[in-house]
Each structure stands twice: as C-alpha cells, then as structure tokens.
Length: 151
Image (cartoon, rainbow, N blue to C red; front, side, top):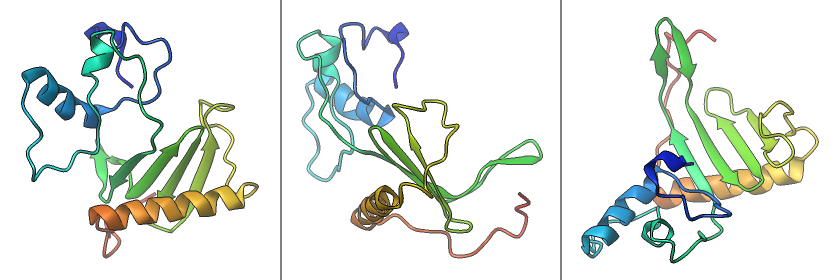
C-alpha cells in the first residue's frame, strides 16, 4: 500500500490494493508512452487516482513469489514462500515444508489468528489459484533445501 506522502493517493476514499507493480504502468501513462507489446504488466495505472479522476481500483488478487532466502545479520528473515492476497484472505505457502498459513485480514489485520485448520475449503481454493498463477507466470520453485538454513 502506498502512503499519502507521495500525494498519489490523496484523492482516494476507498483504496483497494496498490503495489509497486502499479508504478511501471503509471509512469508509462504519465509519460504518454504506450505499453510495449512484449511487456506483460501485472499492475494497473494509478494515474487516474493521482489526478482525482478515478477513485477506484479493480478488484484483484495480488501474488508474491519469493523462492529464495533473505539473510539479515545471522538470521534468515524470509524463507522460500508464495502468497496470495484475495481480500480479506491471505494465504502463505511455505516451500520448505509445504505448510500453509491462512489469515482473515478484515477480522485480524495483525495476522495473529492462523485459520488454515478450520478453513480448509478456503485454503484449497487459494492454493489452487496460487498454483495456477505460478504456472501462468512460469514461476520456479526451489529444487532443493538450503543446507545452511537453520529455523
């Protein structure tokens, strides 16, 4: 979610999701440059929002794919995972062990109540959508576990 300091979202009353993937199409629009035919865009232009002409974004799912590790200091902060955010649901799929976490962000924005064991149908639905998205984008999964990883 972009903050208001940039002025981009000052005219928005109900903002759904905007993400860094939206910056490239926004810059293209502002510059008057058509999208190159060979560029696939996950994002949408926020130019109308910034100008106060259009205060809405399409309903959409957002996906994250992080097939690696992020080491901060001596600690792995992020391990390989995939995420789908389909409001109000957020599913995190961990590639290390195949486990999942499910949160209802409307009821629990701090992600303190993990719901995967009680919302199995929602887990299955979101995992299927996440898998289809990975296939459509050619996203790769880790082939082997990092031997240096220590949970």
